[in-house]
Image (cartoon, rainbow, N blue to C red; front, side, top):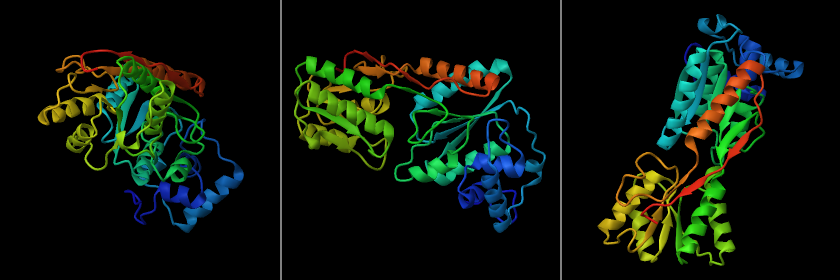
Length: 339
C-alpha cells in the first residue's frame, strides 16, 4: 500500500505492518496523534521508530502540524457495496452528534485490508476523535485486520469483530433468522431455502446458525442443496431464482430486503408467484419493504435503535475517554404478504 504525501512511498500502514502494531500506535509515536486513548509501551515505540527509520518514512507537512486536542471529526469506514441500511444508520448518528459540533467523514472501501488500512491511516493523521468501523470483517484476512486495529481504543465497531475490541453494537441476527424459521414452520413449510453469500463473513455465519438451529428446533431436515449460496454480482438474482424453483423450495429466506424484492421479480418471470407458489422473506425492514407488491415479510433489526445506541456510546467516549459496554439489540419479525 502506498499513500500520498511521502516521496519515498512508505505510509503509516507500512510502518505499522513492519513493527507489528496498529496504525493508531504508529500515529501516536511518529505524529503525536491518537489522543489519550492510544497507549504505546516503550518496546513497541522503539520498534515503531526502528521500522520508520528502516523504511525511511517521513511524515508530510500536514501531519507535522497535527495537534493532540479534539479534532471534532468522526471518521467512518464502510464497504462500498454495503446494504443501504448501514448508510441510514450513519445518517442518524451524524444528526445526533452534529449539535455537539462534530463533522462526519465516511470512507468507502472495496473491502480489502489495504483500503481499510489507508482510511485508518488518514483518520489517524487527521487525529479524528472516534472511528466507526462498519468494514472489519474480511474473510481469510482476520490476522491482518486485527493488527490494523490492535490497540486502537477510539474505534466503535458496527458488528462484533473477530478480535478483542473496545466496543461494538449490533442486532441479534441469529435470533432474527430463528424468528423467521419459526414463522415458516408455523405455516407448515418443510423445504425452506437460505439465500447466502460468502460464509467467511461473521454476519453470514450468524444467519446460517439461525437457519440450521431453526431446522433442528422444528424437526426439519437439512438439505445442503437449499443453501442457495451465490458468488459474483450481488444484484444478479436470476440464478438464485432458478435454483429455488428447480429445487421446489417452499420458501426462501433472503439475505436482505433488496435481494428479497429482486428475487420475487425473478421468480415471477419464471412463472412462480409469491406468495401463492413460494414464500420469500427479507431482512432489515427498509422503508420500501411495506410498499412493494407483495408487501415484504422481513426482520426489523432496530436500525434506529442501533444508530441511537451507537451515538450514545460515542458521546460517552468523547466525555469519559472510554466506551460503555457493547450492545446486542433484539430483532423483531414483521409479517406481511410475502410470507
